[in-house]
Image 1: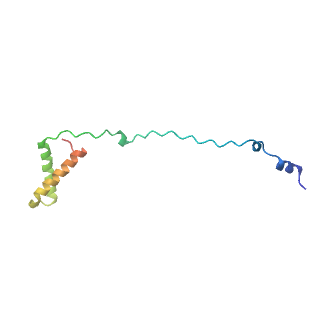
Image 2: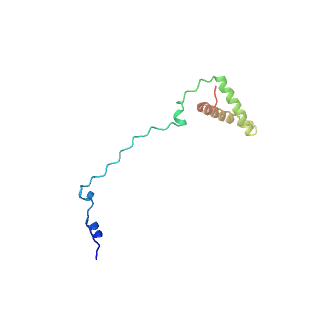
Image 3: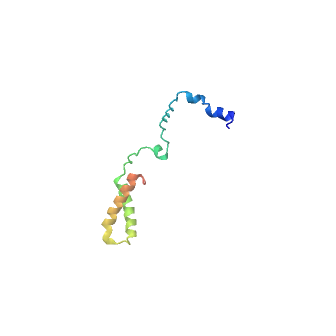
Length: 101
């Protein structure tokens, strides 16, 4: 035999079942976040390096050529190569702002 309490519960319909179903709400799109300020964002745009006099540049190249020649053991037959390599390195350092006039 079935108890009357369980029979009435099983036959009863919940009130929400008779109501029409409402479609689920769409999620609201999040507003785009502002970019975080980082060290790179705070850096000022690359400025043109101040003019370097011919004498200053030559002095930088002379010193760099000396150290390049020293690393090669002061081989006199490679003096031109040492000088040209020094010019390349000095120009690179000036462009990067690692040495100043």
